[in-house]
Image (cartoon, rainbow over all chains, first blue to last red; front, side, top):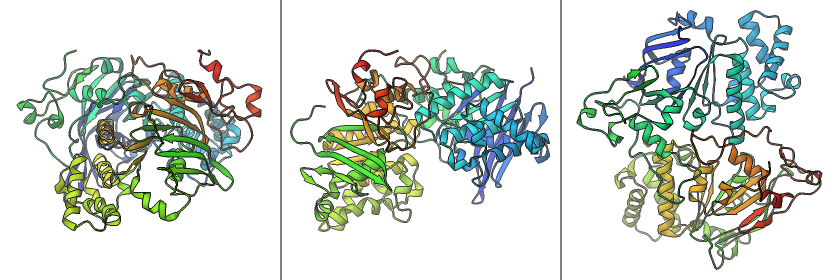
Length: 319
Length: 320
């Protein structure tokens, strides 16, 4: 089956003070139809920039190299992107309030998507918008259509964003930290909604989060990013049971649990990730890695393995 | 921790109103030296407002805050003198450090205010020692906040808060904006500092696992009220208030976690209301007609457990 999205050797760098800062350093990935892929990594690991690159939403000083294909078409220029962006390929963000226009009603903003992309008349677009709000479990959708973004709670706004992303029946939705700004009880509702919507709409979903547990609840497969690269690719169930990359393993140890001994020292990852623009010989994780050997400091490991189990490490943990 | 003797901090019936809306409703609790009290609840529950009212960064509408036996609201001079013992660390460390002040100057500022007799060289030594204590090199004192990562800035903010040896440190979401790998470092630092100085901590966070890890006692707030107070970790194994249950169940868990099952609460939080009755009743799956009429007081339901729920005694046994 053809991949919905395929990315080959994508590099994204930003011109900065005469030099260049690499945010994404040679990433290749495939996302199959209806698949849900979680992307995890710490801040600065490049997870957001990677998908802003896919969407063509990078800052003006970004330089992109590599190949992006969506539904079999090369995303070579703005015209190619504009044919799919906002309709077949959509994205939702962490803060729904900054994504919604404050002076237009929810109904107008939702209907506009259908008018623009599907050439629907406004009246028809509005009723479709109401039906979509219902499908993302917004109570009293007809009343919501007439409301402005500030009249809705954070959780409701995120539902509206998701409705907007689903209006034109996309084949891929990218959700970037969609629950991070929400309270834990509301986060739980959005996680449940994402699960349900995946089943009902059958689109592929990319879920970007710094929170492994959030991703664990939704994703089939997880990509772990570190310093602009994918360091591990594994089925979600495998990743948590049998992490292969030392970074993944260390990260999982760091998560405080609701059992475990209290007041004990929490396991930590020593050191810092490389600073933006800092270029290391060898593996970027080597300075913090408990398994690092001389080879790791000179030779950068490639991402190798089968499509469902890949790791970029000279000395991966045993399966 | 069952501390004996007089509490360091006594909060009694503290109320904060904004334009008639009650943000903190008659909250009372004690905090002892060497003890950490965790404070959890969703945004809008009044956690940060409570912290600010305790420190008198905003004026409470009524109620009292006694610190070391003296009412902080009584005298401005007393409050000023006690400021050195009352410190706070905020969520965003970069926003709480002055970008035009070197980190050494930022840490030295409390010293120059409260210990004006200290010589410049002694101050420099103290700043270097503090930087080293929080895991940074003393040599970074001349640098500016933008040169540090988020985790390092939080260490600097902690160094500034701790330089005068405060008796109470309030952490308002102090680890929330940090990556998990850095979060543990800051939690460990706070635990070490508490062991060394016997300071009390009020630890506000929406991260329940972190709160459980370092709290001797936990307060759960909902719409300005304390709805559950619990000694030790019993709250996390068996929450009694229906809101505490919902909060615990909503924590996402890794596959194979042994600490309960993930469940979403099907309701939205209510607006701040001044109406009678239990504030949680509209979301509560166990609400009775009684709950609409009277606001349940915080009662002792079991040893070390206080719950504001009309059905708290039934909650001691598993309700389906």
